[in-house]
Length: 249
Ligand code: 13P
Image (cartoon, rainbow, N blue to C red; front, top):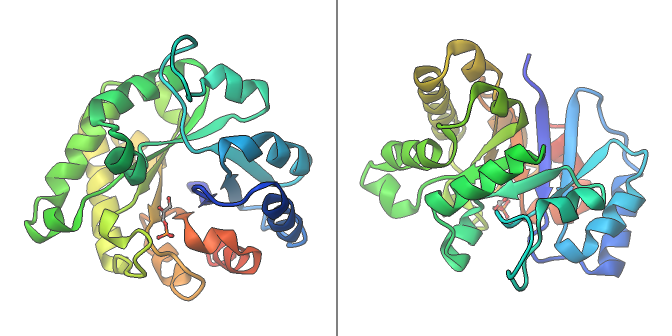
């Protein structure tokens, strides 16, 4: 049985007061033991979140990190800085980082390599644009995203990897992939992992779906056999909504 995971990607939302309020509200809910829950605040709120969630069953993830260990990278943050404040997980490859900040499969490969080497857990995001789905090239595109950034890693590295399929056309649009579309892609991903590694690894890797997951559609999406949970944007900013999703398995 794979882990079930729900992670909230706060993006560039929640200052200190808002973080305090949201985390206070979240910690008032009980969380099932068979679901792992993460929140990913902005860099400036990570220490606050680590401190507020100390002893709570909610883990803290960063939204990005640099591939370099240190040096002349103005505005960037390294894995040792994250680990130093108690953050062990990082989201890499989010579509907004790809489209707005120029991240590529190659640059992500470097970030992944550093994160793995430094013992970080990675929530690795990927997914196609609407045009690619319309042209029916979405499977090829996803395969390439995974291949370049991840498929040269040794099998052991996959213990540190959580995948998050996020079709770009479903992010923040209110339009989700149908449960069948999510299932179809997740099954495809497992097939590719099996071809590149082996059946056991393919069966064990956790694959989240992200893109307009809301309290009213989470149950249906999470019921798909190859969907192990969700990476949640907008609905993670409201404690009640997020907790409905956490309990939607
Ligand atoms: P929404 O849930 O707001 O569509 O965002 C999804 C997302 O980008 C999570 O990383």
